[in-house]
Image 1 (cartoon, one colour):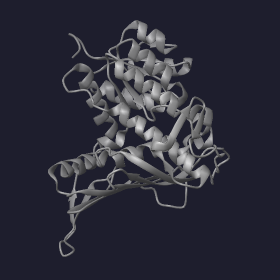
Image 2 (cartoon, one colour):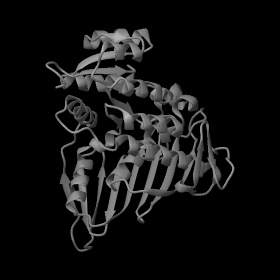
Image 3 (cartoon, one colour):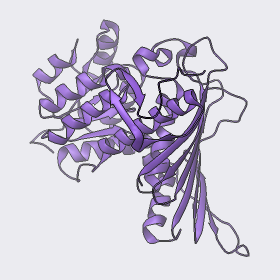
Image 4 (cartoon, one colour):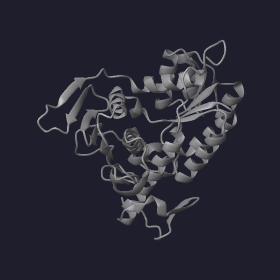
Length: 354
């Protein structure tokens, strides 16, 4: 541990995701402190976890914690993450990194200079089936990886039944792409060991709710070494719920449901049987929080590159929005950035189509 006692974790934002983390940190033996603007949320948290609470994150930091988990609307990620990193504490920031590329870049810049580390909550990395795919990749079982396809499809899964900050573009930065899409983009690139993305083509839609943000999206990414990624996500639609990942290589491939228990290994030899093995399903949030707690305690190495990879995801998602608006592929290397807008060297900004 960081001292003689348990690791002291501040949970900032005591809504659904904050409580998910708090339950697991409590199970793992961490000491909890909470912060939220809502008095009722603070009272409930204090009763359930016998933990002190504060009305804002600065008071929590002043009270003293080893690390914080940030589960607030995306627009407020930057202020809290930067304050925490400047205070020298470690940070687990819920996905996405921020509500905009510019804000994400400022968080990443702070993290590079901070004494503490910062990681981003891409929980699909912590699936036991994802772990099996990574092990096979490291063993060379796939040969040269060429393509990864990931989807995350819900049916009737719009957060808050179409109300609240998830469908408020000013607070969230977008719709389903900023909520579920960041998971599928990260997982696909993670399995490919984060190659350089050079081109993005995508389409967003808003078809099923009384809101202005996207509720489904489809995209194709092309990488510098010829690898490709396809991703699809939806809050609601005419498709069965799915969190399917397909990995293809020159020697073999794999397919699995990220939250499932069966893992299919497919040899390039068309005469060979598809090998299906059963893998014990795990609690991805528990695995994520255990890794974070151990890194804070110093019993395992902090994650490397998490914020930089989250920044790549943010840029890719931003490019999907731009590609949908312009109706053409976006070359990531051709972009220029100005605070508060998206601009390109080769074209004027086009309003997003929904």
